[in-house]
Length: 495
Image 1: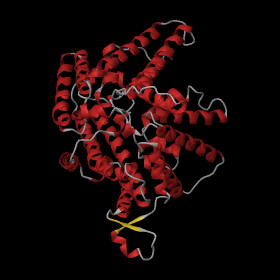
Image 2 (image 1 turned 30 degrees about the vertical axis):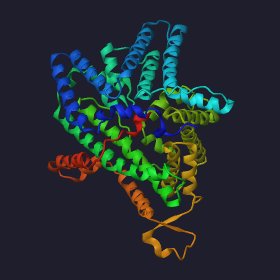
Image 3 (image 1 turned 180 degrees about the horizontal axis):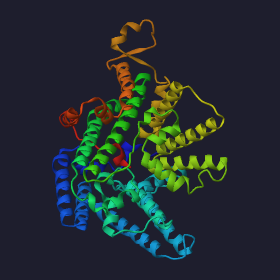
Image 4 (image 1 turned 120 degrees about the vertical axis):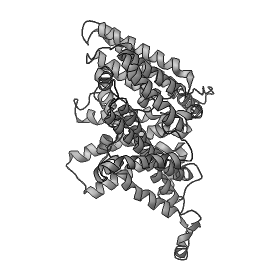
């Protein structure tokens, strides 16, 4: 069966385009300064020239990953813009047959495009498995960022259908989709947040306050990615990619991945928000200390907030939301999270991850309806444990690998002690010794959970005197630049 994110066939995209990652020296020291300088120079000539310059820079950024899908992306933009223009010109209100056909065609073809590139081989594999067929896999290369720019355009078409906005100039719609900070991995921005900013002539000159704020966020995000996420990644592989892990290795690896994905994706989001801020564009917040959550609903209010907003606005509410009775509300919640899991990737592991979170949300609603409450420490512990267990399915290459890790976490694969605890061996003869300090690994991971709960930028802004804060950000930047031994892709680039 299909594997987790690391098993996806689009890994070849990263081999082609690893040079233009946000954490690469090429991006930091060449592309970004050039893009900023060219954009503001072009804006000095005219608003439209500035937008065209930024579209060009964004296309160059994307082309560094793979030039083969530039035409696909541009075709997608032209198609959705055309549908939106037809919707805006249609008469008869949102109930008219013409408008319903147009919005159905727009949303349907976007979903079909995403389905073809992302799920064709998954579908063929399962058909072959269930029916004993021998259909050949297509090995379709996944266009980078297709899940994100498809979702944004679906939202735009639906909003035009509902009469909430009208199509702007094609260039402004194009930069809404193509703006490189969010192009390949979000945040999932709303058209009403972004297009109006690119239409504001007062934002077409450099603002030093925004440059400082953007650089500060970028440095924090870069440090999270290189110094923390990539370090935690070294602890993840032994448990997920080897033989059946024993108790301490399974827990150490699962906790390490829980921290890796947080620092990786929140780091990317902060870098993206910071980059946009340098261009005087404000992106929505995407993380709000999610591992402080006291229940699973609270977790999803804090984790990947723009995805949660999109699923609520364009899936949960159209399904009926909470307007059709208690039972239907629970079903709508479950379906929303199930489809959210499927959106993440073509794998049964992602399906199970979505099912777990859907079931968790339903259980929380039932629990809350009865007025039941846990003490805060227990509520936090139960939520964090649930999220950590669910991440096992998100990370595992295959369903068998996920079950092996979970088996190790409950002791089915035995227990190894580090040699530092060899004195306990006579007391526990069934235990074996290991050269790796797994207990220390696990304790470090658990201790660093506390780090994840505190936004680095807030710490610097609150406790470091104003004159020293730039030095603090510069320190984080230098650590990230000189301590990273390799340039690694971001986890969410695979979706």
